[in-house]
Image: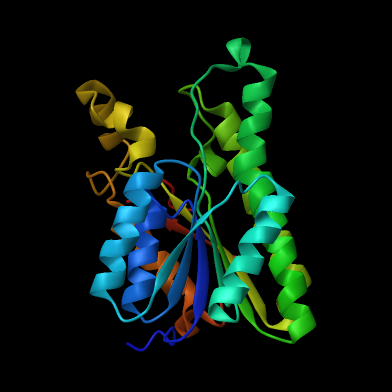
Length: 255
């Protein structure tokens, strides 16, 4: 199947690990150049990008970026435009998953979670939507949300669930606004995914068993499981999909 991504340019936030890193590699495989937005683990991110650039014809570039800062996001876009000459796809994958029950949650922790998980996608989406409209270009935005946006959290992640629920609402609202300009905005909702963000949970057999009991397909997702849906939504094969959140939870969500 031709995904129509050859020669396109994508920005993937949180592209240094987990779902974001898997999406970066799949987009490169399909011929898209990719800007990898990262803020932690620089040494490993740079090493991984060197490996990918030796493996694929399309190219990846690393860009240090704080998604919650408008100045940083503007510099990111400027650097990508300078390198690749255009931007066609935005994957908002950067996120944090802190743990605290509401009765003990610090105000700053709640704010930081919303800043990274919700404010970041808003800033980058706004900047790119304005760029695409000005240039009369079509574009794709894919937001990584979560099953927690719909089920909530019973394990100390209310701030995370709230941020992802907000991102679902933002996805639908923005999709309605920009559809007339040929810009598609979608989301993908993972469940429990094997990634550095939840490494501690996955090293606890009791907690893993509790999650598996909620997953009809009875396995924890690999980052590639989610990345495949991201690549599809970024492709020409998904040109008639907008405003939708695709369930990639192994059946946890089924909505």
